[in-house]
Length: 490
Ligand SMILES: Cc1cc2nc3c(=O)[nH]c(=O)nc-3n(C[C@H](O)[C@H](O)[C@H](O)COP(=O)(O)OP(=O)(O)OC[C@H]3O[C@@H](n4cnc5c(N)ncnc54)[C@H](O)[C@@H]3O)c2cc1C
Image (cartoon, rainbow, N blue to C red; front, side, top):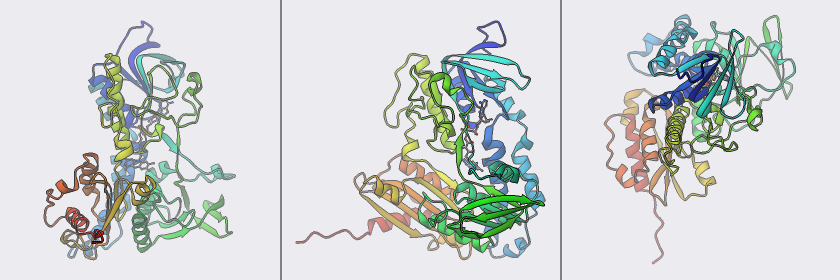
């Protein structure tokens, strides 16, 4: 601890971080690694949404569901997994993966890297100052010599429907922590959280009905074949998918949830999950004391400094800046912001060049994402639609994943698809999507290719092992080489 002030209720550090999720932890860690003193203010559990109510518990619920779906397509194993999942064992495993909602291990880690922790709700109280209200009701004032980083993340956004509170709907928090399998579950939404939770709970024994607004399919924003494959598998698993379905009202009577749709249709369920987006946790962080608007996303420069606040001291890192709402991407931003804070503290120049030490370039060029459904979806960089929108000259190359020795080995009746987007002017891959069982671990190869801007001609020499699903690279590159090239009139 840095004890410049004698009063324990007033302390000065080089860096003050509000929010101890994965991102805040990494900002503080990077600052400490650079020799700066740092403190994290956390009002709940150190480790944030990801550890206790998002990534960790959701993947613990999904892993047995996906493993079983895979095993059902492996001869000799299929009969062994034909019965239902042991839901109680899955939920118990989920509890362990969420560390039983205790943060001692993360507190011990924080101590080991020399970062202090103040428990309580933090608010900006003017430039470089954070006022903390502790659970005991005491006040602590923290002053930052160099930087304050707001890393307060996001919460679930639910629609403004009359009487919804009384229905006690599930958000992502209840969907990842429920201790019983609902008989009937309505899932509202068609994005990543919606499809992952629909997959998990359908696999654990719920009868899931998905209500998706519009006719654009699932996982909009990704390549359309990704959402189509997930939809097919969800239906085969027994889920009902209703597109063009918009919720008009919800009530709960005698424990049952009654949902009325805009077209007058009615549904009855045991629980309803709203997976309808995220909202920044900035309503009560004192933004007004530095000229910002409470409740807004915090827009930042490429080194995660809040653009609208002068003085190079206020950073917003992770979900709260709305650049890429993913743990790994937020942690990447934390490494960049931590390095920028340390450089400024030492009076060094900032390297703001593309791919420079203080520039989160990957946020705009190569964000990897895995959707842990059956089948898995793995994406990085641009989709064909996005490439078209940016006006690039690209070639889109597709391959049917069922036509690979690796996928034949993986599962009988394997279905999947891969797409590679090649920038014709640069001769590099600028986007890739893989949709199929077991493709998640393929993603980093694509991320390295996109980030490194590896020339297609050099990728030709990166030989995938036989018989792995990675051989899709070879097929994509062959299709690209053999593509019809317009012949000039003689
Ligand atoms: C169901 C679900 C599944 C997901 N799965 C994945 C996945 O598989 N992979 C992936 O990469 N991403 C996943 N995500 C996204 C991931 O959870 C977020 O990107 C990540 O948690 C963001 O980290 P963060 O540190 O920015 O914010 P958070 O994890 O939200 O942490 C913010 C912290 O700030 C604290 N805080 C807020 N306000 C204050 C305050 N005023 N004072 C003190 N403390 C405060 C909060 O208590 C919290 O601990 C998932 C999200 C959901 C909802």
